[in-house]
Length: 485
Image 1 (cartoon, rainbow, N blue to C red):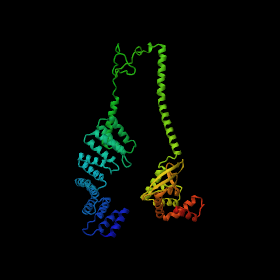
Image 2 (image 1 turned 90 degrees about the horizontal axis):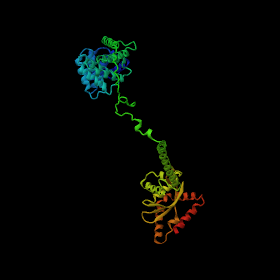
Image 3 (image 1 turned 45 degrees about the horizontal axis):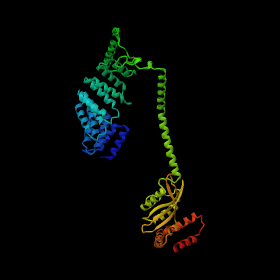
Image 4 (image 1 turned 180 degrees about the vertical axis):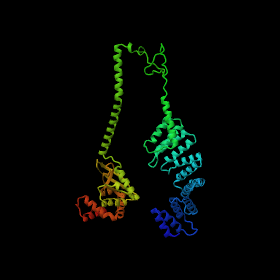
């Protein structure tokens, strides 16, 4: 294919110069070349020019190019071209084949073309089926036209009741491009065929209300016939039937049920006991009824007050527990989950105080990393509402134990607890005597070696907590004293 000619042809097509475009699309092809797109667009140009036979031939040539696809669109366009030249049978066959293309995005176009061709061939039933398929196609943006045409088919088939339903449904789906007056006129014909003259007159009046729409001769005849029928019906006088005489001995009538449909009549007052009660009995009964009404009136209020009281008690209990250090997670949970998070490499921020800097958090994490496999238990807890202090006893995996001073604060959500300081308590760690103490010393030495990279930072943090009251040399002296112990 000559790409230069093809591009020029497309430009002419977009510019609306369909004659030049058709010639250049044809010139772009090599002899006997299959070029589906070029023949498709050439067929569109020929349709615009009114050369329907040539357009049908161009669409047929495009269908020979199986690599191009778009069979549904090509068959639909060819059907329109064949219908334009009067080949209704060929058009119906082309439209029918288009509906079988599963890749065709707008099959309703093929169904509409098929229905119109079949209607001209006087195959009304088949045309109605095609109109219905077009109407229910989800891709059809304006189903009102197909529904109105389906109503026309029902009228021709002698099914005015179905025709009325089709027209009424069409009116529900009317779009900007639909002719409401034409649909109303069709509805008038359906009403007239159904013997509903008054409804027919109303429909025809709505159809001609704008003064522009003109009824067809057939519709005009139906309109005149319907108006004559309504006029004849209104001129007939209504014969009034004489009133039936009232029986002399009428049965008792219940004013709440005058027709006696329930079979229940109002009781005689003497049967209720109202007129036979003494004054004291009436007063007593009135008091009893008053008590009953009061009980019923205050039942809901009592239930509401009980619920409110329970909520207040529950809130008070939770508030008291909060001031006593209750939290979720608790201090023990915060330490346990911190150890687990460090061991598994998960995020630890939720277990550490939000007030800590990144360096301070790193010191605590490094300390915990040196206690891999250990079990931590919080004891000697002094819990307050916003702060808590305690001792964390750590049972080492290799034996022995260490003790740490821990300070807890409320976490970011102010409900649970988070760890803020975690420093070794040497007094508790080396308080035992004998072999166990020796084991503890060995274990602490191993622990110091494990966290060697963070030991200097740990000493600095301790020095900061003591308001810089000791120098680095004093820290080393303290460490030497601990080793001698």
